[in-house]
View 1 (tube, rainbow, N blue to C red):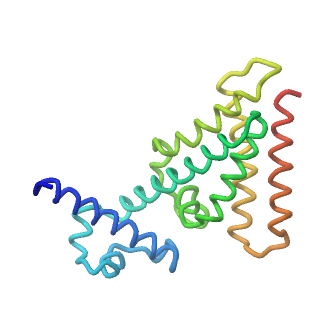
View 2: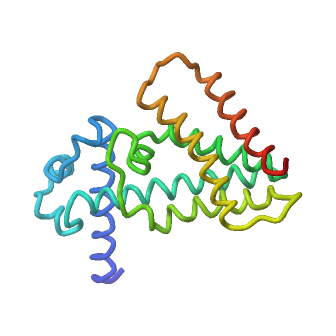
View 3: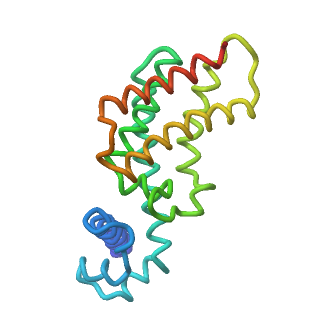
Amino acid sequence: MGSKERILRLKDETRTKILDAALNIVQTEGWQALSMRKIADQIEYTAPIIYEYFSNKEGILMELTKRGYQLLAKDIRLARDSQESAADKMEAMWVAYWDFAFKHQEFYKLMYGVGTVCCELQKNMEESEKVGDMLAEVIESLYTQKPVNEDEICKKYYTYWSIIHGLISINMVQPGGRTTDELNHQILKDAIKGITLSINS
């Protein structure tokens, strides 16, 4: 390996180390505790070195948001491909979305602003759009009885999302409430099926 390749590899490793340290801080102390100084202390670098890779904390949040959407896209894709019918795909994808939210709570909170400030730039983020596109494609395939346009697909997407995200947010903000995991899953599946059935009714 040449010196140029070695330098690039070391830069990539340092960048990954910074992001992993940031995520570790968040997992143990929460998003409000994250700072460039804490990241530097954890990986035993000086703060100026961190700033060579990320100009500010927002840059780190952006990269972690991308990482979260990449993980979510992978889970949703696997769920989609595990089913045959469009209705089963839709349910499996939203259940995977739900499972992701509680398996990777720190990512989900950052991505969607649950109890924290989400990254504003995520609205135009390619990784975010991939998740939306996969869900929209399956929603479109549910329309077997009538023609559908982009506005209608968008409306149904936000109908699914608002209910599922709302249920997730309630459980994250008020953990240990009156609902059990089993009841939450039943509510989730009932909501998904209800919206899906309404499409061709």
